[in-house]
Image (cartoon, rainbow, N blue to C red):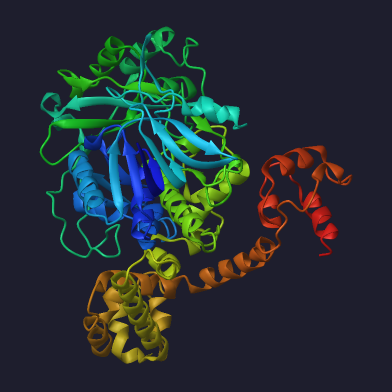
Length: 624
């Protein structure tokens, strides 16, 4: 028996869920195939969403009409804005979620999404005809046909778990690996390799002496991930706890390194630089007497805690002995040890910016299969893949975001242009236009694009228009309202800022670092009256207006730079050259330009090993 769909999404992790809901909400008849319907959007590692640059990605997912931000807000048990001591380009939202509620909310969302259907099974073969994917076959022998396939297999492709010398086939603890797809795609010329990641021990909170840890409370202001959500947080808010390793811990770990799969030759794949195991930390940073750990709650009504910073694949007894050297963990009880996992990934230079593969038409890759790490990176890729799969099926222009438009654009461009030699993790430092890609204005950048596409709905679009209008009212008021020195000087002196010698426009005062809109509004009745009339999301709108006012010069300068670079984005070169025939190019440039076959001159300029001189050669050949 054969079943027909527009789009099939393989894997119901974070990439698969946002891919499937996006495609279905756009109108494609979509099938989501998962091994276990009870673990949809499982938080395989820590129960947290967001963080440095990752939080910006989640806000972008939400601004585009994706689901991750909404579900995180509904299940958050702690919320914080990181990097508050820095400028707004660096502010990054982060939330702890209730792991089980997160799964439950995702399941509810999928069950109530029109056009979206679920099948519990394992795909072991793609059906490919004339270099075009047309369906899948499962281990139950069921055949599903579709016009496009999104593969989001995560860590399941030939997954292998390591705890000391014990090896278990699996994609996660107690979940089977998936076989067949890697081998099949290799036959079509795909380049594949192995990566490694890991997860820490899970701890019973009843065995922790919290008096020997430091409490880290969350924040309870207006900030959320979703631009649609301005209701109170529904779940009880909990604290995280910080503590440190010590020399006794390190001694136990050092003595056990010969049993570590990372150091005895058992694991040969590429591991993450930015989330290293505890054994890697004590080797790489041998001079450090301690490393900070974060004890993070897994849910509102569970005793299970995640020990962030203590990823390990050492044998159980060594992990336990090391933990017991930490005073707060003297009587520790654990639910399970940490472990490492090796899995297959595909070099993402084999993809276009739509995340469609170059070798098989209508086949898209998203998530860890592309060499990334992190729920947020995965969900954003899933969203873009789901959108473009729908476009491939129903027609329309490809949906691609530029590096000056979104962190998602930076992520995908980095992947398809540079490839990966370690699990890719997003940081603010990867984006050259950080001031343009702030977390406060993702809706201003992206929602109109999504609305035109048909994914963002009318309610979301109306809220965006309302926000724009309110910000303009605030900006116009402060630029035109005059403040007299005698009416404001006493207030300025209380804040320790210089008094006025003559009247100024209100905007000149707000530009001072000591002053904010909220502070000065109490001193100017007309201004306060204007702000009090804001119907929704008052604090969010005031913050956005203030950032625009204070950083306007920097924002405009960065826009000018981006516009200059974007001229090169409009010069298309894919399939225009036989690079090996161009004598003036360096040998490295010939090899890399041929392998990646960049879409534009701008993309070519970002390929490592392609020099400015090589770009000039191409521009001359184009008559530019």
